[in-house]
Amino acid sequence: MISSVLVANRGEIACRVFRTCRELDIRTVAVYSDADENALHTRVADTAVRLPGATPTETYLRGELIVKAALTAGAEAVHPGYGFLSENADFARAVLDAGLVWIGPPPEAIEAMASKTRAKELMSAAGVPLLAPLDPDAVTEADLPVLVKAASGGGGRGMRIVRELADLQSELKAASTEAQSAFGDGTVFVEPYVEHGRHVEVQIVADTHGTVWAYGTRDCSLQRRHQKVIEEAPAPALAPGVEERLHSAAAAAARTITYAGAGTVEFLVSGDDVHFLEMNTRLQVEHPVTEAVFGVDLVALQLSVAEGARLDGDPPSPSGHAVEARLYAEDPAQNWAPQTGTLHRLSVPGIRLDTGYEDGDTIGVHYDAMLAKAVAYAPTRAEAVRRLAGALERATIHGPVTNRDLLVRSLRHEEFTTARMDTAFYERHLADLTTATPDPYAPLAAALADAHGRSRFGGWRNLLSQPQTKRYASAHGEHEVHYRHTREGLTADGVRVLSAAADLVVLEIDGVRRKFDVTRHDDRVYVNTTALTVMPRFPDPTAQQAPGSLLAPMPGTVARIADGLTTGSAVQAGDPLIWLEAMKMEHKITAPATGTLTALHATPGQQVEVGALLAVVQQEPPL
Image (cartoon, rainbow, N blue to C red):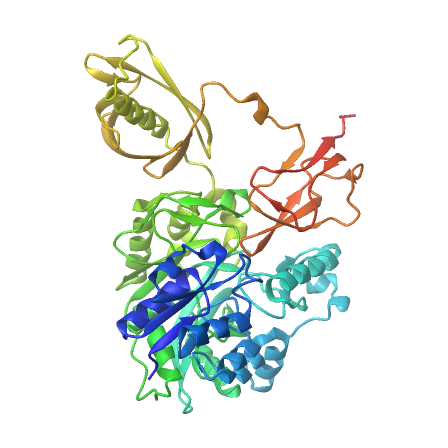
């Protein structure tokens, strides 16, 4: 029996594993980087061991340091979580060679599926249907569109859809560079891209005695940058017979490599056609929806299999429907740019919330931008979707910009509610889903709450009838609001102020009473779901930048610069000039106009803060 577990990971998944360990009276050990010294997973573990450094390469990807930490802390077993070293066969062997229990599949099984190209060869030999890879040098117009894909790793990194033959070589290079940075392996391959395909996967659990259980299906079609955003179980609206074929193929895949533990076999489904994509030899991010539908704890099953237990009888029967949404600190309207800063408040009541953050924690630049996974369960799909959308809409999220509004709109989109979505959902609908719908009364509510707070501390210094002005900035632009102090209280044109307190303002607007919850953190004000920044009365003239300035949209590292780009280079509007790496993804900075590069401040490897001046493009004068 395992009595102590080190989780070779961080954040949400470390906290998730620790939760099950506590329920089973298993002692927990965390590892943490310098950037995670005060992170939630570090705080909640029984014991924590420091990994010197901040970046993943220095810390969570150093297998020898993690094994040493496990031995130093007296851990008996190692759980890899997902990402980082979770699918690294050499790390699994190092754990076993150190006399520790590996809570995962045999290293040989990991190795068999570690390379997607090798995995496809094995699955083809086992009779599992799949898309055959293409020779990159032989791709023609007739083959388009194609998908460039990293042979190692996952999480959407090193993947590119190519629709124009002229773009293939540059996308191969970009994908290889990203894959090398993320996984230490720049090998990529090309396969046909199936338009309107659905991403459907099968959760399997296998013991060391030859039994393989399939736990239904999951649909993970809503993806951004090939990373999943919304997942559900079971996969809805599958054609007759498809689920049975998926289960059969998943079990065959597991038996082919003598699998043990929890794993996921991923498929691309288009109508009646089923194509093997890959097998993730670890626990998936979206495992909670399967847990909800089957009433199981997959982490507990992983521990049980690692202890040598048998899977007796048949797997439990599914019931109901579950939907999960990944809440990211990112701005979908700005090319999914990751966001950083203090998370002042995070509360999504009424549903399951798996997170690695608590109120007051800092969201940094080194790791994935996911804040939490929100999971709703109900007897039917429609009820589960409605419950999740409502919970997210009512959630309190104070801090960096998130994708919350996008999630709510996605869940309520007709294509999703009628189960007609596919992996190109956001390609078709992102513009509509991110169209600004500002609340025009939020700035006024912020100003009235502030006025009430100041009035309590001697703020009644102006004439009662003199109008007051406040200015705010939001994602939708700048706002100027006006109000007055009168003997009857605060007033504003066009509305009736029913009450105004520092944390709650009630207005009557066209005969409708509306409540506005107001919270302030320094110069940021949150009014219901609207975030506002208090603006100074007079703008700072030093904050102006020259026209054509390219500013860093996020803190990160300059990954690379376009070949041959120097001061004086001629550039075309839209040309990629600089690539930033932040939160495990590369972000492309393009030329804002056709002209000449008059300044280049960015250098490869340079750490930059948000708003840092990277380069300047002087636009060509009109003819």
